[in-house]
Length: 404
Ligand SMILES: C[S@@+](CC[C@H](N)C(=O)[O-])C[C@H]1O[C@@H](n2cnc3c(N)ncnc32)[C@H](O)[C@@H]1O
Ligand SMILES: [Zn+2]
Image 1 (cartoon, rainbow, N blue to C red):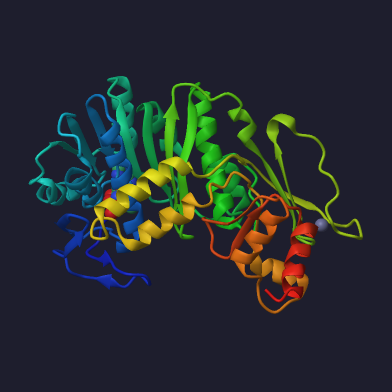
Image 2 (tube, rainbow, N blue to C red):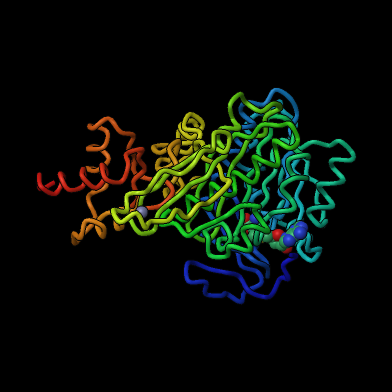
């Protein structure tokens, strides 16, 4: 869908509209006009992370780079790349800035004109641009694909247009299908079953990674998730394309089952799929709701996040906002290797107690019992653990008895 611009600018949470068409805006080291099209100040963490990723690539580059801001809007991401991410003057870097709406070009041009690096501006439909790049064998090192709706059909050409070890930063605003609220839509857009789950953002991210991984594998390429996050509206993934599929990665595609009645969860890799054991319903009447195939491997690459945190701290709060830094720290502390996550509200409800258990204490108690335990970095108020539900509930109960 090509979005039709109108004379309004989205502002802070709540979506109030400004009618100014020459709104001056500062973010990071950029100062620019937003123009009359779509812009969300609240997406700042995604833009900060795009800058950090590009900067990371620039620091480690051994040869010239080509970066593509495929759905640039007012051009803010590419402008920030040019001002904040080009840290290696010996590496020639070309910024390709594209938006399908030709009316945006003069604005983008005005915004990036002061940049001292090579830029290329186009107003192509994203699929055309990517397919042309593939035919002409012009690979990109970094593609930022900030789409409306589901990026579906663009994933395959975006992967094909990426250089090996290239980075893809992918957004999807389709939350209904991957969170199980549009089951038909999930079959169509993900080729997967999606069932409602209390950890809905996590499930949506896992569905999305699973989809991209299958598309990369079809090309004989590997895919590494670098980080994955959402605020419930947009689902964002940073991914690295690998020349080869890392050994054993096929085990990372699987099914997640949950019994809505007793809350039990089970995970199985597709490669070793066998029957589902009974859940914990004492009357034997429980039924598994199964989602997938989806990604059951880690969601975050902790060493990379550690590096990005150090970079963010070095750049300071003007360039990387405090909320972005907190997001990075949350994700780094919870790589998400174990896909079973429970909301602490659900645990309180199942125990019939007033308030949820304190997350920090619960994590400590789980670890003390020899289980994996972490506060979910993806969704607030959730605990990630490989403990089964009866053990998890028992640990919550003992915390209450101890009065913690
Ligand atoms: C979410 S906005 C981009 C916001 C921008 N990246 C930012 O950080 O502010 C999506 C942009 O994609 C453009 N667009 C939508 N569909 C497109 C398509 N098929 N090809 C190219 N551009 C498209 C729209 O004109 C819009 O400006
Ligand atoms: Zn059950």
